[in-house]
Length: 397
Image (cartoon, rainbow, N blue to C red; front, side, top):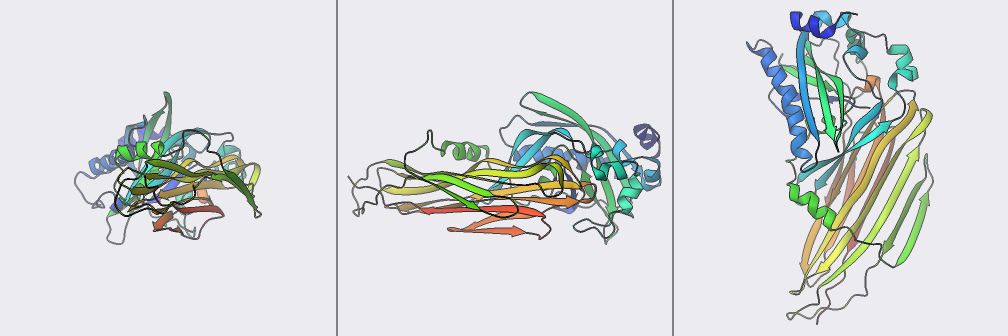
């Protein structure tokens, strides 16, 4: 195969995401005089948007080497020569939304995929596919737009740096005409998982202070209390352990002063795993949910739920490309005299996909103490963990 960068310059589960550009920028008119300039700017803008959602973490994403070519070149290059496929060190992302402020943030961490896509049955069969063959294969695939008539593609490199560790890899924007003839895109990035979610994110980013507040609500040490363990059989076993340390309610007296107090509900640790469609390894999820109940001296009670220690990942060798997607949400409420309620929820899903193409939409929504899980129905495996509690009354001096 030809050298892609030189030719484009002259002619021109792990994650691929189907992302309408209209949700982060206006579609580009196909006859725009500065078409390539606008295409390259939208690539840069997407990675810059990711950084606004990761807040105070030291994640850095540098995009370079952008070159764009039209569809006449698609049959001349192998897909795996322009897109780094899943394997090795990858950046996992987990979404957390603030149910009260209606904002969202993403936490980033390095995860290691201990098998390469090229070694899977998919990879052994399809690693010789050209870009055009891959795009033709999107016809009839669920949750993937028909890309067989794509207009052009932008190839580029990304250097992802997190916790002092870096990886440089290749990724691709595929531009296709919408119903109006303007260009939208599919972004192909298998190393930074959260690009898929951020590209379609419709909530504003959570202020950096929220991440710190969430962390400060976690118990400093294991509280004493009754520990419960439950196991629910299924495709994989779900185990939940935790500690409920709510104190005996003390009826508040209107007015007066209360004794400042802090009570931990939980933490409750949830785990699940499944090996479906794995030659070896598994996909797995875990998360810790709980709440902190506080009362101040003016008898203002607050219930602050949290979700932490989250993982939604895939390891080993699989038959198909596995797309892993997760979401969580937590709420905060206050009530004079105590008795405030709050809730949290976590969801993780795995979906088999063609060349990792497609977008998976799941969402956790909270209304009072009700936790609702939304799923587009395409999951091959999923877990949902709700949590809610009502704090006791404040203790009066």
